[in-house]
Length: 161
Image: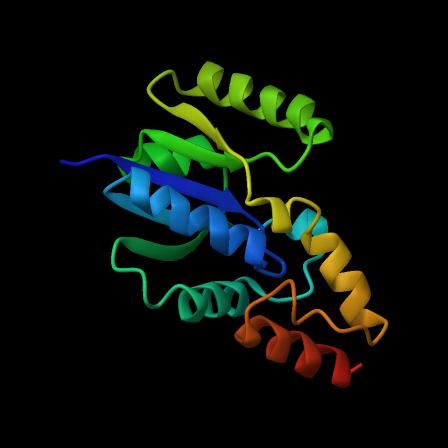
């Protein structure tokens, strides 16, 4: 079995920063599972099925990536699917404390799983799903920050409000 990693998140919506990290992780690992958390506590804009569909279409050209949704603990998902690495993104120093806590807790819950941090390309270091949702909800142009599939999904979602 080759190196297998997961890149978990809510991905609501899937940004160019996420896309960048997945593609870079796919150069490091033989297989990357983009694991989209149901995470109902965050009241996502898109349903889990919609987020899985959007990310799957954006990443359709990447042969060693799989996109799937999940519920429950990330480390349990990793164990059930034989994934021994969790990839996390760090955009800024402000992300580090929370990500460090997550990585430490993950290691405590499942000592077989390691967390690897990747930083996004510079042009995506300030892009977050929260900012993209806010800009799109106010009618702003997000096409520079998301794939056209995502921009279209956001336009459709906010046109229905």
